[in-house]
Amino acid sequence: MKTAFITGITGQDGAYIAQLLLQKGYRVIGLVRRSSTQDINDTRLKWLGISNDVELVDGDLADPSSLIRLLQKEQPDEIYNLGAQSFVGSSWHQPMLTAQITAMGVLNMLEAVRLVCPTARFYQASSSEMFGLIREPMQKETTPFYPRSPYAVAKLYGHWITINYRESFGLHASSGILFNHESPLRGREFVTRKVTDSVARIKLGLSNELKLGNLDATRDWGHARDYVRAMWMMLQQDEPDDYVVATGRTVSIRDMVNVAFAHVGLNPDDYVKIDPALFRPAEVDVLLGDASRAQEKLGWTPTVTLEEMIREMVDADLARLASAAA
Ligand code: GDR
Figure 1 (cartoon, protein in one colour):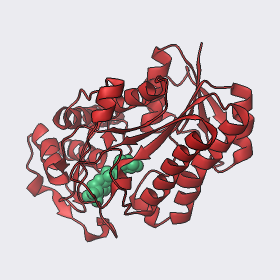
Figure 2 (cartoon, helix red, strand yellow; figure 1 turned 90 degrees about the vertical axis):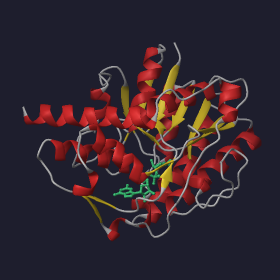
Figure 3 (cartoon, rainbow, N blue to C red; figure 1 turned 45 degrees about the horizontal axis):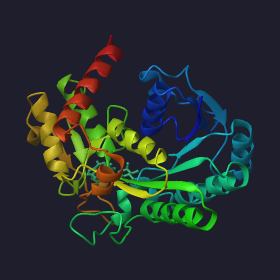
Figure 4 (cartoon, protein in one colour; figure 1 turned 135 degrees about the vertical axis):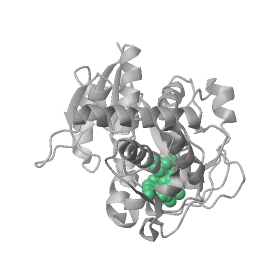
C-alpha cells in the first residue's frame, strides 16, 4: 500500500486529492495546524464522507522540524504540497505571512524531503497567477512570468525552488501550474463560490444584494476534481516535469455571474452592486491556459464546462442552505 502525505488537506484541492488517493488504495496522511481557538476544519473532508479515512497529523509549513519529524515517521511515497496562504486578495494585507507559508513553506518541505525521503515523489501547487500581466495570449510552461500580487511573487519562488531542487538534487519534483479551479468545496472568499452562495441566498430570500469588484477580468476556469487528477498523473510519470493545467477557454467574471443568476431564473442587474473596495491594487486581467503538454504527456483532459460547474455549485449551495434552515 502506498502512502501519500498532503499539506493543505483541509482545503478544496486537499480534500479532493485525498478522496482520489483513497479510491486508489493509498494510505492518506494530512498535515494540519492546531489552533487554540478552533477545532480542525474538516468540513470538506466530511462533505466528501472521508474524514474518518484519512489520518490527520500536527505540524506547520513554517516549522521545518515538524515536517522532518513527520516525514521520518510516515515515510511517504508521494507528497502533495497544497498548503498555502492561497487568497490573492489577502496577500496585500499579509504579505509577510504569505511569503513565509506560500514561498518559504515550499523550501521547508523540499529540505525535509531531501534530508529524510529523497526518493519520494513531490508535487508543488504552482499557479496561473504567476503569469499575471500576461506575456503571451495563451500561457504555457515556457511563457515568461510577471506576477502581480505578493501571493503570485511567493508562488513564483515556490515554483523555481521546486525546479531548482529537481535539478540540483535529482528529486522527483513536479510543479502543476493550475489555472483557477472551483467546486462546491471552494472557499467563500473566492469569486465563484461567493457568487454561487449569494445567488442561492438571494433565491431563498435570505439576502438581496451581491457586492463584487472587477467584473471585467477573465479567467480560465475548470473543476477541481478534474485538476487533482492531473496532480496524481504527474507523479505517476517516470520523469518529473512542469505542467500547465487549464481548459483553454477564458470567461469574464460578468459572464460567470450571469450563468449563476440565470440558473435560478433571476436577473443579476437587480442584485449586483459594484464595490470599489473589492478592486485589487494590481489586477490580473486575463488568463488563458494552453494545456497541450498535460494532454500529450499525461493524457489529461478536463471534463466539466464552466456552465456545468457553476450550476453544480449553485445547486450545492441551495441544498446546503436548505438543510441548514431545516
Ligand atoms: P484568483 O481568484 O485571484 O484568480 O486566484 P479569485 O476568485 O479570488 O478572483 C478571480 C477574479 O475575480 C475578481 N473579483 C473578485 N474576486 C473575489 N475574490 N471577490 C470579489 O468580490 C470579486 N469581484 C471581482 C478578482 O479581482 C479576480 O480578477 C485563485 C486562487 O485560488 C489562487 O490561490 C490560485 O492560485 C489561482 O486562482 C489560480
